[in-house]
Length: 247
Ligand SMILES: [Zn+2]
Ligand SMILES: [Zn+2]
Image 1 (tube, rainbow, N blue to C red):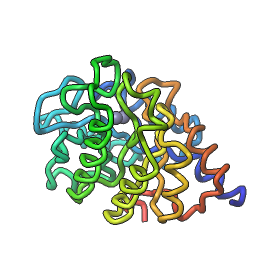
Image 2: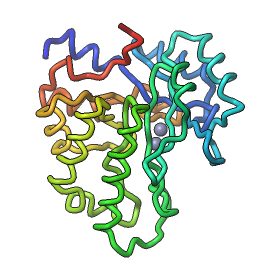
Image 3: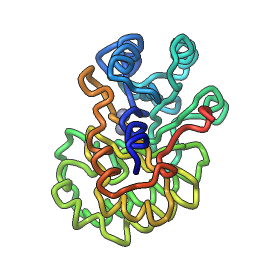
Image 4: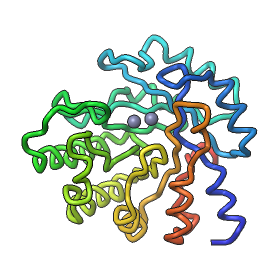
């Protein structure tokens, strides 16, 4: 990787929240911070759900105001939609047309939230299998460009991630990313997926997306986790995901 290329990967952040959902700063502030940090390829991707009410999600009726606001700035217009446990996603196809990037995020299964929820999981193997099936189904929707934090597990089983997320699990999920043309996000807030996962992505030619998943000002453009992995594994530049609207 030449120094020019490494400069590019240091200037991308395709996963930023704002006060439209659960970030604690405005779009204007986010854009300003991204500029100050020298970022060149930036997407605002607030949580969006039109299928069921969830707190801190942009609703269907707020959608056009969100898109109009983003139109005032030189940023990519994106959303992070819910991957529901039946593998459907929380956005309709006609809304997707107005956006540059749609990220899918799996945030709960069987009422167990993947963050801050210490509910017991009685059968972790079955749960992790359900995650696998749900992620694959969501990619088949043809709606998602990227899946965020794909190998992230709920609190109670997270310590076992390395054992529960097996080689077979990784290969099965990454094969689907490959078949469906969906990019894997290197999620810098939660530092997933790990190198085993990325290695198989590179082998299969799956694109890798760089996202800070910022919810606070200081997190915007903080993508060291991705940059370090990409440099360490000498990932070729053509595997870095760039939304097609930029071509
Ligand atoms: Zn998420
Ligand atoms: Zn997010």
